[in-house]
Amino acid sequence: MQEAVENDPKKLSQVGWQLLKEGEINKALQLCEKLLNIAPNFDAAQYLTSKVVLKTGKAELALKHADLAIAISAKAEFFIQKAQCQWVMGQRDQVRKTVACAVSKAPTNSLILVAAGSLLTKCEDIQAALEVFLKARDLEPDNVSVLFNVATTLRYLGNVDEAEVIINHVIKLNPEDDNALLFRSDLRGQTAVDNHIDEIEKRINNGCNRSWNSEVNLYYALAKETENVGDYKKSFSALSTGSALRRKHLQYDITRDVSLLDDIRYHYHSYEQCSQAMSCDSSAPIFIVGMPRTGTTMIERILGCHSEVVAVGELDDFSREMINGIRTFAKGKPIRKELMVEASLNIDFKTVGEHYVNGANQVAGSSNRYFVDKLPFNFLYCGLINRALPNAKIIHMTRDPMDTCYAVYKTLFGQAYPFSYDLDELATYYIAYRKLMDHWHKVMPGKILNVCYEDVIDSPELEAKKMLEYCQLPWQPECLDFHRSTAASTTASAAQVRRPIYKTSVQKWRHFEEPLQPLQKRLQEAGLI
Image (tube, rainbow, N blue to C red; front, side, top):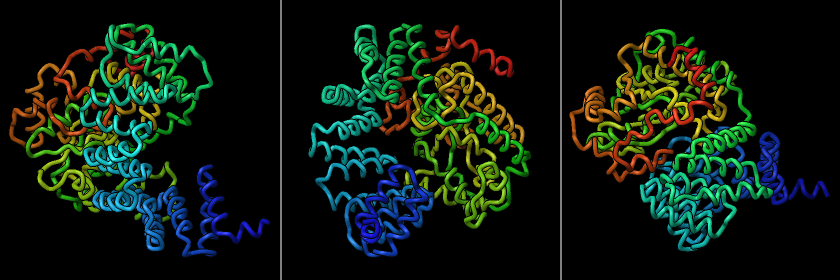
């Protein structure tokens, strides 16, 4: 019986899919190697191998197996897998073409359409993604997964009212969809006469057999809505419960993150270490860096309203190209994480810069002189950015430390920012971040422009002019009408940036002054407030 399984490609592939599902990647790789030896022309074998290999980070090899699967049988799911590989490689133009092939192969398959729309969203083609999701909705008008994607995309495009109608329908179809409840709570500011607090509390108190993820969603939804209506005690109680539950299910060590930031300061310790002769001379990139929830999206929108600038969203391209450069330097040999920063000193920064700009231009297009990349975490790489792209501009967004930390703490980020679910860890990370930014200013004086959130709120025109002057751009009053922009925003601030500048978020942390005292004490001891 065992021998029959080992020589049956279909049964072997079933075992391989199970291993992949269970995260047994090494065993899955061994099985794929055997499977390919037995049946190299079996399309499912090539497809499975592409899936498994992509999990190991070898996107080029995964792409090769996806192409082999397509050559045997041009199925829509094989094109989706090919597009996934191209996405990991930063080939957005190719992703779009491959996704179009997948859709043409299976125009009535909602699973393929949703996968296609998700890839287009990753490429920042939000309008194109919406069109694909709407095709899926036409096929399955009551498919909650499809409807959720439609609602999310509408929110990115600023169509909040329409998104709320759809998400209410999702909740009606599936009352246990707690993720939809959180989505609805975040769509707009809730009011005393129009909120869902009773409904959320009823679900929490029901105590049914709910997953911890659902519990977290409910508590964050309750925290959001009770804060909106001014019930701050109940809001923080819900937030602290939800964040503690989220932290409990994270495998995270704050000391590793702090060590990384310290390592960066140690190795990029002087201007000489943050510059070099051979680099990419493009002046197109404008990086907006800092902590999340500090107004980076607002600044992106202000700059993006300039006729010579396009906003490209939060790209992970620079860090990806840096890692690719390290792998090239290491000639494929594995490098321990604690040695990555030191290894980065030896990479080909000119190539990193050129590849980064090429990838970003696939989002930006060629009609604008400049593009804005607002991934906050690029603050880690300011010195490396200067080595790869010495003509790039770097704007560091700052905000009151307590407001920053509270805004981070109350946001459910998914897989990002794992330090945000514990106030002590959040303080530790924030202190390390400030040390690194002070370091960059010291070793690269005048290179980075600090922009203060509160200053933008108080004097938007003055601060906008200051940023444009730094970017060597002429003043255009349209930059102050950023809230009228129809451009998509895929960040947590997608709803807020549709509003004119408002001051209600300044010093918001003071509503929670008592429970935030331990955080305040840590920041005071560090000399930050």
